[in-house]
Image 1: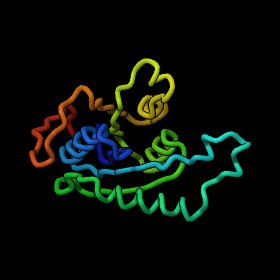
Image 2: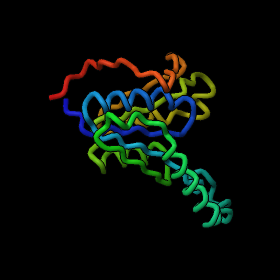
Image 3: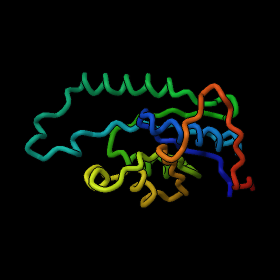
Image 4: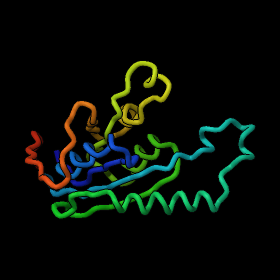
Length: 166
């Protein structure tokens, strides 16, 4: 399996921190490009037609984009070992944007965090990670932060994935 490009979608939450470390470790191991993607939900997709008049003013949307771009630059990646880091902010349906970005950029592996919700919260909120797994055309590694101990950012991780570069 050749892993040349890895996609790490992030929502900047604490749940994504463990997945971030995993994505960085895989990128370092394979010498792969690391793509960091944040998707701003398009509120129009979530509103009924009657609420279409309440669209976000362009200035507010522009401010949200700028804020997300500033936040994505703060993601503390272990970039020293990565060949290249690409940081992107998109607007749209979160899972669909992740899947489309992976397809458009020939991503070999998606590393995504999951909140580990079950029961009613999962039924009501769904799972972005689950939808990405269902629709992505490349392998998806989900990382549950509730089952792992967060790694101190100052310490390095001795990581030896089972996959071997081709």
